[in-house]
Image (cartoon, rainbow, N blue to C red; front, side, top):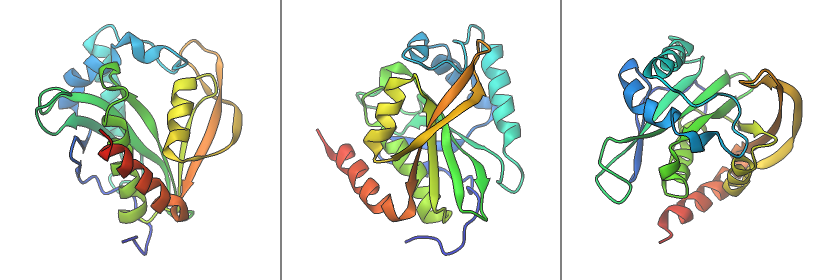
Length: 212
């Protein structure tokens, strides 16, 4: 059931069959270092950061993520993504990635789902579709947002394909949008999912999670 009034992300745990998402804390830095130091994550067009070489780099990133969440939830809410149970994906509790809900505008019912990275070991598994399902369900059904924006670098072909696979609509390109780690400017490919489209997107994600 959809929320009648738009509210910021609550910060409550988001728990599925394969992964759970908890608001990021400083204690998550060691597990996230394994993700942010994975050099494969920076291939195919992810140019916003460089691979982390030391735990201190990840600690600084986590500190910034924690600070970005305002007391009333209107800032960016970063989530650490972990495995729920022992299995083929790894031991329960393993940190597999991070994602966020940010740019919160409750008046316009807009939110941005982004700042996402998964360790390359979990690409092509249930981790991404279930993480997206949990975040989108929270945004639309619990918080009452009407539009979720998802964007990426125009040169990041893997990410753009994954966003379209969700069922998001490509809206266009925001030029010279964000500065990359090397100092160059990124053009952002902007996509969105509207609340009226959520039932179709939801069904598609659930079908992917049920697929063998």
